[in-house]
Amino acid sequence: MKSTTIIFLLATMTTMSFSDHHNSPKKRIQLITLDPGHFHAALVQKTMYDEVDPVVHVYAPEGKDLQLHLDRINAYNTRKENPTAWKEEVYTGNDFFAKMIAEKKGNAVVLSGNNEKKADYILQCLKNGFNVFADKPMAIDSKQFEQLKEAIAVAQKNKLVLHDIMTERYEIATILQRELSMMPQIFGTLQKGTSTNPAVVKTSIHYFYKFVSGSVLTRPAWFFDVSKQGEAITDVMTHLVDLAQWECFPGQAIQTNDIQINSAKHWTSNLSLDEFRTLTKEPSFPPYLKKSVVNDSLLKVFFNGEINYTIKGVHAKTTALWNYKAPEGSGDNYYALMKGSKANLEIKQTAKENYQPTLYIQPLDKNFDPTEAFKSIQSKYPGVELKKSGSGWQVVIPSKYREGHEEHFARVTERFLEYLQNKNMPAWEVPNMITKYFITTKALAIALKDKQ
Image 1 (cartoon, rainbow, N blue to C red):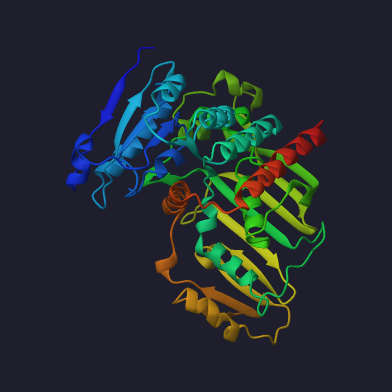
Image 2: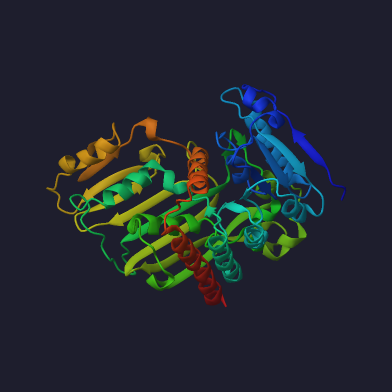
């Protein structure tokens, strides 16, 4: 394939600092996008960052994945409200990865695409001196988990930053659930639970048909190949396992020997050929998906999973589910429960909550009133209120704290940039990252073995 260079110039240039890259001071952080195949790669650039050079070098094979990525960036650059000012310089030769390594035109590689290659990409980038900002999952099976451990060791040795995009830590209902769980006067202490009655429950429902940045998302056909995307138990489940550690043991390092996986299972989501066509714009199932197709008309893909495990003796259950299309007016759905000795903290997102993540405090003693102790939360998050709800209380969250999934990408990117500039990644992040992917990949191995 002939190599090409494409320069996306801005449709709208609002400041002189971006009008001539070669005449402006070089920013300290220069992004490289490697082989983008998932829309999360573009969402990193939905916002501009002062410390980041507006020129982003993209290395990828020519094709639909790349074009969809560039179209999304162009849409951000040309939108009416707060247009971005990115300049995408694109190389599409067959040697795109080697070219990226050789040219070193940036110091931070953004990875969000085909997960079959991701662990190797991460490892090779770090070996060649690049920092890495990777979408989840960074490992989709046990083999990749071993590569990831090697990559983390390389990053530590070379003083590089490897960080995965954990957007769900920036959802305000989750933040407040975590804050309240650290308040013994309201929550008490985290219960241990049992395997049949876990103390921590997290369930995420995703939908194949969705709107991203105002348009219906076109998914690549390979997304439905678990050898490329990964099963739900090692993909979406990454968020749930991460949140369980982040909320239950804030600021603590969780080691793999703190984990005991009791059971894991997986099952399929089913898509008709018409649904597949709608999602991918492809006329038929490609040959590599035939192994998952029944009667040439129904695609069965392992996009549902459940893990029952303990973290330092605390019983947790995480469940990841995929359905075709969300109910009208809703989107991806999240449920979370933390059981304390004084109260349970529960996040619901049903029609009753207008599909907004809503946090409830359910005291175990019905006469317990949390309002006085809650004032410390209000001093930190002005405007947050308590409202009586049944036998408990609803945490009323003002709209100023509400951000959607897409906006969370700016928050986690800002955190990554902070780690790059200040070298201040918390000590617990690395061991917890290792343990997170140990749980998901080990659980997949258990689920696969139980199917045999």
